Image (cartoon, rainbow over all chains, first blue to last red; front, side):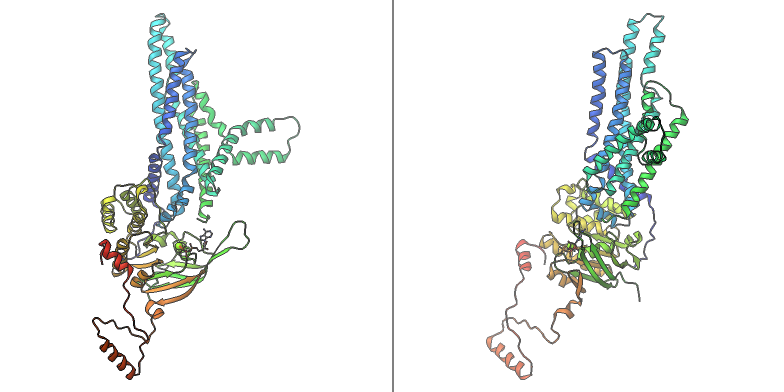
Length: 294
Length: 282
Ligand SMILES: Nc1ncnc2c1ncn2[C@@H]1O[C@H](COP(=O)(O)OP(=O)(O)OP(=O)(O)O)[C@@H](O)[C@H]1O
Ligand SMILES: [Mg+2]
């Protein structure tokens, strides 16, 4: 009889098998069809701006594109993550997996990585559609302007069109959109380790998302109000800020859309903030999941 | 003495029930040792705590009191599952995977990869009789087919211990016999098997020892022959015996100071009959 094989506490192979399987599950559930809606929206918007000849059609297109990319990736992450654990537990596939030499940490990490892969892929696809549509419109605009503008004003007009089109400075913005979606899915995963139903998970996650967007504004209004601010208020608002991530930070994307370049230090600061919350939420999820009765 | 394949010491498990103050006691002070290479049958009525015991053994459920270990490693450690194959009751796998993909997935979780894993998976599909269905999705598998893929999945990591929770539930009689033969094959290879089943005939055929649980407690344990056979009785089955021969035998028996306890025709087994009609083996 062979001796017992040495057990390695952490194995990348196991985690990647789980991640790959999660991605495969989501792909075979046909979640990518969801992205067709995004494509339709962006293309529709493009046609719409032609029909009604806006002042700056490319700018409208860019705002709509980035805005819907943000909503779509958030929603995709939320809906895919909320059911991940409950489904495995209900179907008892969790038993079969954890009966293998797989730790709960590896399981959780594998599942989350699968969602992260899905979100990264869909962000890439959405960006490709977005850049494609924007590029086409740019060509149309250029052709039109070349015909209608006087030759001496042409270089300046062309410059304006190019500035409004897809530019490399959009990439940090898209990365932040992705990061926000990853953050929200990790939060959803954390909620699903304590919740007893996925309806609860989804609703709570949506509420936290909304609070995350208004909390910084509310806090400012609250703290800058006239009169004495009690210590209790300060502690309370700090606690709220700690528990709920300040998602308003990610709205620098709006600035990027109008052409403002994002300074690297600020980008890194926001990215670090997002990564920190992802790490904390994931570790909390692990704490709850490892002590949970299956 | 070598370490036991399975060691269960004073194990108890309470499940708390919502809206009730007292908990359900699923397992009561259970102690059990299973040496390597033995086929052990855990029997008991529904709800007697068999599945719960197995889940605790695999670290899926945490014990309220007591402890369990597999080849000397405590069940709470992930490393204890390195040598174990588990078939849960009513197994249910990812519907969107094919039979082959399922085995590849579980193989990777056991640390296998590449060509050896592929060969292994195909070989196991052959073994459990699913070679023809290997590229079909599990969503379209029947209950018995799921049971078979479950068994293949339990075997993928070359386990030294197999824990099978009702391995033949939902499997047709021929398939059930195949599984019986497989278990005997594992036994010949020195693999320890812990199984629970409601098919007492089968348990009798394959198990070295059994334990009977009732309401969470182990109420009987030992070799089957020791448990059920009256030690001072012998059965004699005759063919073409004339009434005169029978009378003579009876007379001789009494003369020798023994006693004929009963006389009846050997009853044919429905399982055997079913297999003959449906053309199954045996
Ligand atoms: N997760 C759980 N929560 C609450 N009670 C449970 C849970 N799992 C099992 N039980 C209870 O524990 C007891 C033993 O259940 P178990 O599944 O171990 O029985 P079993 O012997 O496998 O029965 P069967 O032959 O029907 O498979 C039952 O009373 C059951 O209701
Ligand atoms: Mg059971």
